[in-house]
View (cartoon, rainbow, N blue to C red):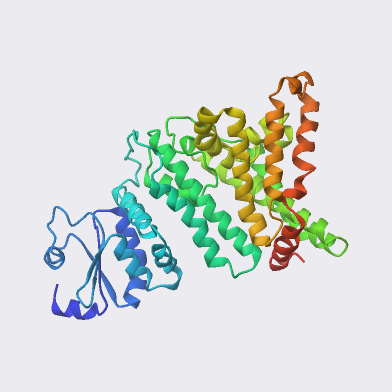
Length: 420
């Protein structure tokens, strides 16, 4: 390094691994932004870097490094936190680091990514984990993400709070199911891992990371069906709901809620499934023709939002059933679902407490009832099973999406979307 070069780096230097394709690509993309803040970039492999950082060539490539203008040295997650303070859109990392165990979670995440930085080509494989699938840090991260999202958006309108907490809970679920897939010995190449966290809403990690299964390419009719469902959702939100608003705001809100489900769960998420399966990844739709369900067990277990039912069955129902029995475990899982829905429905609505939990408690009771000898004697199957399923799930749906949620969350969201 020359004196002239040192003078140009008024704020400091950022050092990266030049042998890592991901690292060099990130460095190229960030170079202009860092230069605008007075930082220059240099490879860790440079001879002068060894001397300046006081590291040996054998150990200096374990993590990125930051050298500030006043001579301080930061490495790994600490370096990322220092850099994140330079840009408004990245300062949330510092907020997360201030939470209890937040810094430990960031260190854990950085160490995981650094260990796999050369896995972009898919050549790395995580060996089966014989330890517990989820550590204290994992569960802490799952709890902190929605807490942090809620604190950051509590003062905002209810629908913004709802989506922020829902997305945070989704990322927490993705982390748990990713760890579960690793325990099963699934390969975790970096590109697929990034796709898992950023471009796929499902939570069946074992299937998504299973590269041994051959996936059939979807046909054109399935693509067409997904597009039609997406367009139907658009029509319900931006055409049907505004027409109904003047006559019945409640009807308009329900049309919009159905439209959102069609846009996301039946439409956009189905298209994402098609794209992944076309690429050879086992990512089945999270909605699997729920109107064809002939029982509550079929509806909740196999057809409606498998993004929740699959991990709930593997991570909660199975272990709990071995301790307290299947019926009690089933009821606990539905109560857990009720509590989670309270966080994204009643909490942003600032009222209606207990109604979502009562709805899912009813679903649990109905499913347990289906298993009884008396229910089997009633032959709740075929069309009878469909009617029973519809009555139990659809008729009390207003408990789930109660009036305060409609008034304080959905209608303001419609206004913000320009659908009013």
